[in-house]
Length: 100
Figure (cartoon, rainbow, N blue to C red):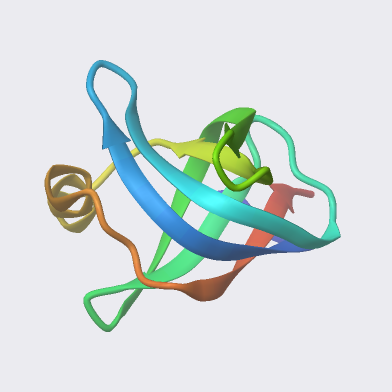
Protein backbone atom coordinates (compact mmCIF):
# COMPACT_ATOMS: atom_id res chain seq x y z
CA UNK A 1 0.00 0.00 0.00
CA UNK A 2 1.33 3.49 -0.84
CA UNK A 3 2.03 6.11 1.86
CA UNK A 4 -1.26 7.70 2.94
CA UNK A 5 -2.29 11.11 4.30
CA UNK A 6 -5.44 11.56 6.40
CA UNK A 7 -7.97 13.74 4.52
CA UNK A 8 -11.14 13.24 6.57
CA UNK A 9 -13.31 11.22 8.92
CA UNK A 10 -16.53 9.35 8.25
CA UNK A 11 -19.15 8.27 10.80
CA UNK A 12 -20.27 4.80 9.69
CA UNK A 13 -23.87 4.41 10.86
CA UNK A 14 -24.91 1.38 8.87
CA UNK A 15 -23.77 -0.93 6.11
CA UNK A 16 -25.34 -3.20 3.56
CA UNK A 17 -24.35 -5.56 0.80
CA UNK A 18 -25.86 -4.60 -2.56
CA UNK A 19 -26.06 -7.51 -4.98
CA UNK A 20 -23.82 -6.93 -7.96
CA UNK A 21 -22.19 -3.84 -6.40
CA UNK A 22 -20.63 -4.86 -3.09
CA UNK A 23 -20.46 -3.51 0.44
CA UNK A 24 -21.69 0.03 1.08
CA UNK A 25 -21.09 1.89 4.33
CA UNK A 26 -23.69 4.57 5.05
CA UNK A 27 -23.15 7.57 7.27
CA UNK A 28 -21.94 11.13 7.43
CA UNK A 29 -18.70 12.80 6.41
CA UNK A 30 -17.78 14.48 9.70
CA UNK A 31 -14.59 16.20 8.59
CA UNK A 32 -12.58 16.77 5.42
CA UNK A 33 -13.37 15.28 2.04
CA UNK A 34 -13.77 11.97 0.25
CA UNK A 35 -13.35 10.83 -3.34
CA UNK A 36 -13.07 7.65 -5.37
CA UNK A 37 -9.68 5.93 -4.91
CA UNK A 38 -9.28 7.28 -1.35
CA UNK A 39 -8.94 4.69 1.43
CA UNK A 40 -11.29 3.94 4.33
CA UNK A 41 -9.82 2.55 7.58
CA UNK A 42 -12.27 0.99 10.03
CA UNK A 43 -12.66 -1.81 12.59
CA UNK A 44 -14.18 -5.16 11.72
CA UNK A 45 -14.13 -8.23 13.95
CA UNK A 46 -11.69 -6.42 16.32
CA UNK A 47 -9.19 -5.86 13.50
CA UNK A 48 -8.23 -2.62 11.73
CA UNK A 49 -8.88 -2.83 7.98
CA UNK A 50 -8.04 -0.41 5.19
CA UNK A 51 -9.77 -0.67 1.82
CA UNK A 52 -10.16 1.44 -1.28
CA UNK A 53 -13.30 3.53 -1.87
CA UNK A 54 -14.64 2.62 -5.31
CA UNK A 55 -17.81 4.73 -5.28
CA UNK A 56 -19.28 7.77 -3.50
CA UNK A 57 -23.06 8.22 -3.59
CA UNK A 58 -25.98 9.75 -1.70
CA UNK A 59 -28.68 7.65 -0.07
CA UNK A 60 -31.99 8.73 1.41
CA UNK A 61 -34.83 7.35 3.44
CA UNK A 62 -38.05 8.86 2.10
CA UNK A 63 -40.09 7.88 5.15
CA UNK A 64 -37.79 9.68 7.64
CA UNK A 65 -36.34 12.38 5.39
CA UNK A 66 -32.78 11.38 6.36
CA UNK A 67 -29.85 11.55 3.95
CA UNK A 68 -26.54 9.69 4.10
CA UNK A 69 -23.34 9.46 2.16
CA UNK A 70 -22.82 5.96 0.78
CA UNK A 71 -19.25 4.73 0.27
CA UNK A 72 -18.90 1.65 -1.91
CA UNK A 73 -15.77 -0.14 -0.72
CA UNK A 74 -13.58 -2.70 -2.42
CA UNK A 75 -12.32 -5.87 -0.79
CA UNK A 76 -8.79 -7.15 -1.18
CA UNK A 77 -8.45 -9.75 1.57
CA UNK A 78 -10.27 -12.66 3.21
CA UNK A 79 -11.56 -10.68 6.21
CA UNK A 80 -13.11 -8.06 3.94
CA UNK A 81 -14.63 -10.88 1.89
CA UNK A 82 -16.35 -12.09 5.08
CA UNK A 83 -17.55 -8.54 5.79
CA UNK A 84 -19.02 -8.46 2.29
CA UNK A 85 -20.82 -11.79 2.86
CA UNK A 86 -22.24 -10.73 6.24
CA UNK A 87 -22.86 -7.17 5.02
CA UNK A 88 -22.56 -5.56 8.45
CA UNK A 89 -19.99 -3.15 9.86
CA UNK A 90 -20.56 -1.66 13.32
CA UNK A 91 -21.35 2.00 14.09
CA UNK A 92 -17.98 3.79 14.31
CA UNK A 93 -15.79 6.68 13.21
CA UNK A 94 -13.53 5.72 10.29
CA UNK A 95 -10.54 7.51 8.78
CA UNK A 96 -10.37 8.57 5.14
CA UNK A 97 -6.90 8.85 3.64
CA UNK A 98 -5.42 9.59 0.26
CA UNK A 99 -2.15 8.74 -1.46
CA UNK A 100 0.55 11.39 -0.93
